[in-house]
Amino acid sequence: MYQSKGNQKLYYKMLHQKRETELLLSALKLKLFSYLENWETPKAVATKSDLNERNLSFVLNALASIGLLEKNNEAYRNTQQSNDFLNPNSSVYLGESILFREKMMSLQNIEERLINGPNKNVLHNNQGIEVYDFYEAARVSIPEMYTGRVQSLIQAVTSLYGNKTPEKILDMGGGSGILAIELAITFPNCKSVVFEHPNVARLPRELVSERNLSEHVSVIEGDFNADDIGKGYDLIIASGVLDFAKDHLDSVMSKLYNALTSNGYLYVVTHNVSEDYQNPPESILGWLSSHLDGLDVLLTKKDIENALTNHGFQQMHSDDAGGVFEGLQGEFYLKKTRGSQDGKATETCD
Image (cartoon, rainbow, N blue to C red):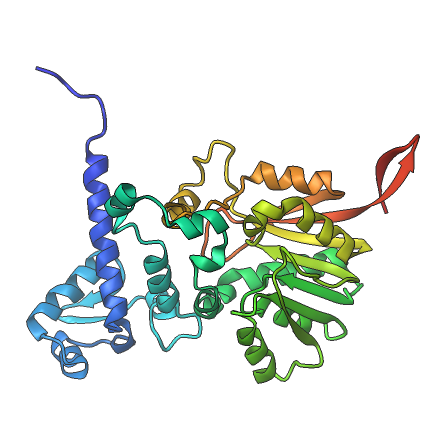
């Protein structure tokens, strides 16, 4: 009799993880966590939510079994972590973002797309704007920014500059503009600029206006692949956006170099993709849906590092970018000055 040596349990574990995910998504759609800040019975929650008490009791029990709720006899309440991240009443509620990303990255119709192939227009144009709703992605990700990304960047920039202050900062493809806004608050004498696509730019404008920061933060509309991004920046942030410059990488790198002051820094966040496109699996699977649609922009870590080096940037140090996504690397690069020697270009640090 054949005796297998593999771990067949792996596949059934994957099925179980899918059920856990489906349970979480349904609970978020029904806003169940909003009813469970305190101990509540299924009957009380059913009355408030207009859900079936019997079936709700099974669902609440299942949520407790996977650690998303606490259970005490017949009563339930959120765990502290669920109250922070899954309760719509929390300032760092991630539910909207989770539901949006699940839809954006869904592989439910993978069979159909394997049969029919990619969208011809997306394949030809290779522009993320044709696949992603960048405005909504920026809007729902605002709470995510405050789960570590904002704090990590402020700490890193403060450490980098010491007693000095950057005078002008650019957040290229900055989405909601939260990073530029918080840096402007941290460094009151600094001017911050958010450069965003016209489809997205109204969001950071609204946030800047709401926070009365119009004198400190400005928003420029444009396509960083084609348009001027300005000059005289002491620090440029390019967080998760260089992939969308894949077909224009050389020109965008030159643009970044020329936009910085002589002692300027570039902060880059990448998806840390390996040369064989096998790791990290979160990035490979996260981009798979858009790749099947026809998009092909994901760059490897080495591609980005080589492009930066070739265009006059020297890596200083890297850290975890912070926040909800594991594997995102935040790296600071120093602009190097260019000279000439024996007719050849040379580069030396300022």
